[in-house]
Image 1 (cartoon, rainbow, N blue to C red):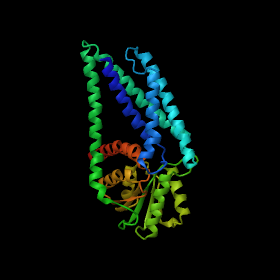
Image 2 (tube, rainbow, N blue to C red):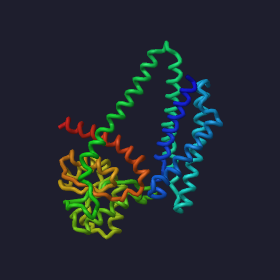
Image 3 (cartoon, one colour):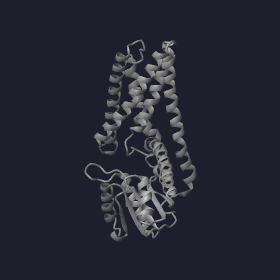
Image 4 (cartoon, one colour):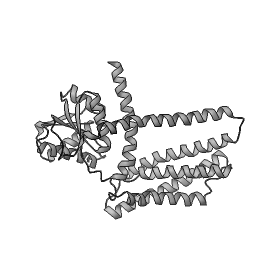
Length: 332
């Protein structure tokens, strides 16, 4: 029983670490190659954990809970710290750029919380299984696990629907139909006000559409800092200030879609974003009664990071958007 449980926990650790490593790949990938990213992110992380776990006896389930968790947390933070530092150095050596240390630390902490919850839960389930008399505790525990699993499965449906429904409505800048206006959705801005690469790509795509004569106006939507950064970018690209509409109240994608029709009066819109985001954006705009198409603002060159980090986020964001839409309809 002890060996079987240890092996199951070990396999679970490998899954968690693989997902963690992919989620922690730098926002600007080293190269647009999945194999390369896996080799510099996943493999070192896995080897580090396997080696340290073996040396530190991380799967000794005979240990008391406190000692077991203390040992695993120490080994985990040693592994993730070395893995993060190695990728930090690798990126500098390969691309001569330095990653934002604050974001690396924040993401590492988030993944660490996931790992600690997994270790605690798996150890708890093992201990409960050793005591047949604790049937109620087992039922409650497994019911909780089942509920999480069901919620996770249900969360996939809105995202799957958005992909199937709107894949045919997404175009490149060159192949896009005409529209009344372009909706540029806000993206990250660094602490010093520098726009993220994602934001630059979106504004550049809007500029290209306008100069091709495919749109007449551009709505810059997001929080105040995002809109200010996008406005500066747009003016730098030579766009006519009179053709720029500032949608400062667009704190979320749903808000941006609502304001397009209610505040700005546009009902035929080209939504500009990255592919991972467009499925949800088109679903939300369509739900608001806006005839919309999606315009790709990137070439998907950050494949591994996009595939794991952003698409995974979109699964739950689309589910949340679905709930918001249903709530709005109930109020009407």
